[in-house]
Image 1 (cartoon, rainbow, N blue to C red):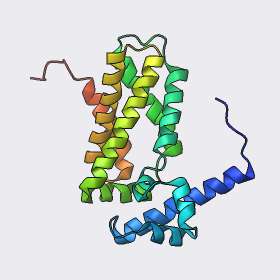
Image 2 (image 1 turned 90 degrees about the vertical axis):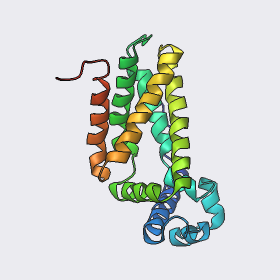
Image 3 (image 1 turned 135 degrees about the horizontal axis):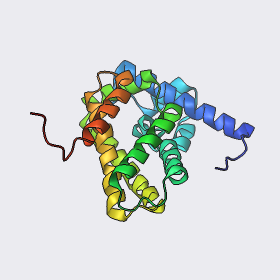
Amino acid sequence: MHHPPDTLHARKRRKARAMIVSAAFQLFAEHGFDNVTVAAIAERAEVGRTTFFRYFGDKQQVLFADDGAEADRMCAYVLEKAPRPLGEDLGAAVELLREADAAVRPHTALSPAHSAVLARLLRESGELRSRYLLTRQQRAHRFAGALVEAGAVENVAVLAAHTAMACELTAMRLAENPEAFPARLDEAHVLLHTIGRPAAP
């Protein structure tokens, strides 16, 4: 995959964006989401409001700042690693998304501290939970598209993408802390393999 040259301007933009994200999460941890303004985030990050809005449309977007990059990388992984063609193999499609997540998440996911703040805010705010679910739906749509491009039939691709999303939401709901999330995600995927099996006596 081609990467653009890492120019000084690009590095400055990444640094400014990272400072805004860090400042926002610090303030959210200290005061809660509703009590933090864009002006306060900009002041803590030592940037102007105009700079803030150059990177984010509102303060909610800061919470999901890395979603786009993570989805980009996962789609690229699917297209590169998919056994061709996926066809109607639902299990292979779900497993491919699981592998993509495992390969990409360590490089793009929030830090444990930021993940803990996000988890707390999602518990406290129905509005944020709705926004989070919207971002998951958008990701599932993109993943389904990547699976179709990799040769999966459309209904299999859509079901696989939403199954992977359900596993992620289950893991987030049950994880006692951010460090427990990967194990809970594995548990959710393992449970999928029990579908259709007779119950143990």
